[in-house]
Length: 388
Image (cartoon, rainbow, N blue to C red; front, side, top):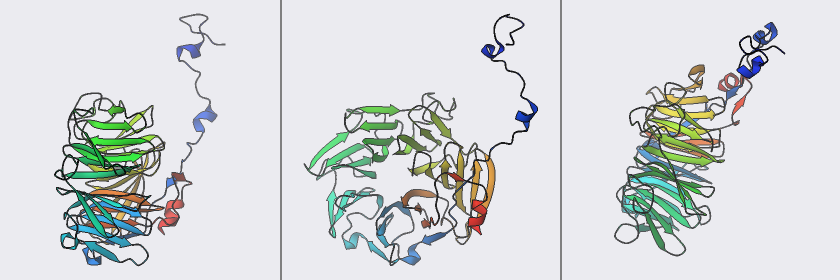
């Protein structure tokens, strides 16, 4: 065994020294991890197709249909007939601006967050309306809604409200009984026994349904303008969304995005990966490896977190043309001409429908058809063949 010339008897390996690589090791080719699936078939749905408004705040896939919340009404897109039915205030909708949609899988009830109009339940063709004046809703500006068992959670500008649909009881969470430094709740999601609140100025709050304890995910460096230390935690305290899948937490903010697997954090920024912009309105994770981010400059999909492989979907302003850029870290691997793509680069919401993806933008809805979809990566060449 070779020993250190400075410390006789101490093996080189213990000092962090190693013998030079042999020629065969140097010549060993770097393994190609493969390429991600790219959506090359898109359709666009706008007011020309029957939407009440092109400014889309929410999309929610629900079995045979897709619910769409707009700036001027609610729409239901039938996937079989491709027909759209709309509801405005004259049709019984309690408020014109629909910012959030959630469907109770057990009852089929559709819950609507209304921007200034509170909360609504659409059931059996009837709208039930909940406001600050007739319920325990803490504020009438509702940004997001989530279903957790018998509870309906609402993220509002003055805290979060939880409604028990069985007991008709309301709970309110503010700085008085939850670890909120600010009470502007921008988003809420619920899955696998966890409820996550994205709070303006308070990072991500995690509520354990079983214990009713809170956990806080803040930016630990305390710097508001930049992420001072790489991968040390959440990238910013101003957060816009959280999505928890397979025990992995994905986070969006106006200053970048992040992923937390329970042990390690990874920050994502527009200069070091395929994230189109650091300004992100929302996100939705499909798995612990795949999440889609709604930015102001396109739709960014982290398709394989392990290799940091992304696909970014953008439109060039002409609704008939767009492209998908494949990146690994910050290296462009391939650019695919998709033809039709997302109708606009300002992305606001996204949802999955089996292999398909639905994107709500400021100029309509984009529907990516996932024929042949596969998760993560496959051998190189799959993208080119698919694009042709």
